[in-house]
Length: 127
Image (cartoon, rainbow, N blue to C red; front, side, top):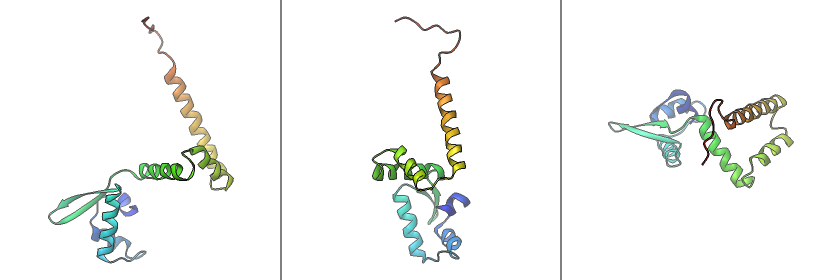
């Protein structure tokens, strides 16, 4: 997936060559991995002649979010708060990361509050 996200659409051969130095694989192995990633919805392919051209079905961040949601559902009873608290308790998140999260949460709260206010100059209709 990293290769496809960083290099764009690729053939199985291009993936195998790119991974050869760090993870040498047989041609049949890389094709199996790509097929399984497609079955799981991470990849899609187009055909050029007899060659499959694989591309990511979604952006890296969106795939990561789906994976984390799955972990939250399986291991944290659906509670994102429980996951984040566990990460804080186990020093997975640095202080700077927590401060960035706090700013993001505050910004999101301000956006939601602004969206709730009625627009000036418009009167609500009586029903």
